[in-house]
Length: 92
Image 1 (cartoon, rainbow, N blue to C red):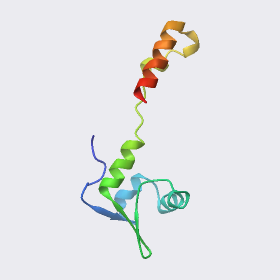
Image 2 (cartoon, rainbow, N blue to C red):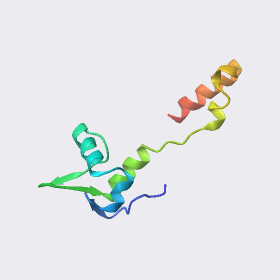
Image 3 (cartoon, rainbow, N blue to C red):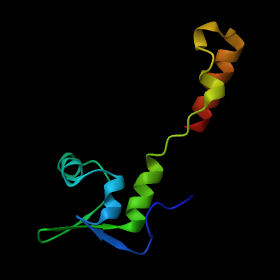
């Protein structure tokens, strides 16, 4: 797994590296809704650990699988559809 953030570093709002996730308002919305990466609230300061940011990014990683979805499933044989669905279920 490639790390987007330095594992042992802490990040605070305003750090330019956090912009890859979104602006201050987006991060505030996520915190309010209980979404986004784990954080610490130290007084009025919000602090993110690099390890938490990387873990959250990895959980939100999407790897498309073109061989399963192309061509459209409606034009595939029933056997292929069953195999494709089984592969998707195995992947989680």
